[in-house]
Image 1 (tube, helix red, strand yellow):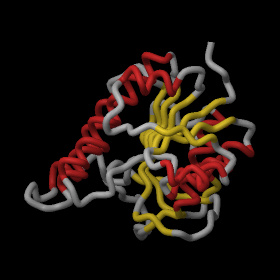
Image 2 (spheres, one colour):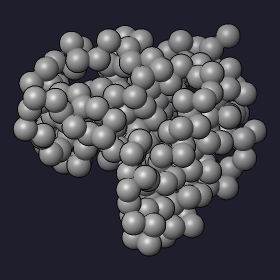
Image 3 (cartoon, one colour):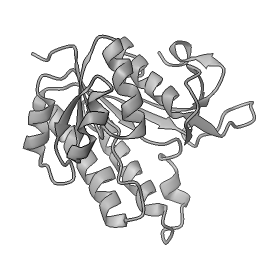
Length: 225
């Protein structure tokens, strides 16, 4: 039976992950943060999370499932960072899907994917020769695969990320990132993304939903149920 208080973050040294880990520990969880660079151990430990050394780009499903054992939820917040199409596909698509398979294998029901606001539609309009296309395709296909699993997923689609402090207020958008009846906002604070991660996990909110959002005026708890 899963330990209800353990969460595993994949991509534990990312900016969102480093903000989310202390919020999750404050909410009463233990957090294992998966990293591939041993030099990042101290940064992760400083957040209150347990650094777990594992390269998701090369780790197979069994190794990932072992890392997920006894977890209540998995948060995928990893990314190749762009620039290399092959590595983008390897991390943002292939490794992401292996983590989904591993979660199911380990008996983890809850899964939170950090995506981006227009991942559902960009693949249909982006120039296939552009440097952006491999990322758009990888995220689109990974998100689609997640919706076809039996996992209790939440897909988070923040907009352009900023380093502003969390307002704990957002506005949700449609699958293309549009906000009806409002001038479209432009950005999402990384710390607000971390607050949303905490909210959906601590409150069982947003299950089997894709939630696209910007910084806004609605408290997160009211915007996501």
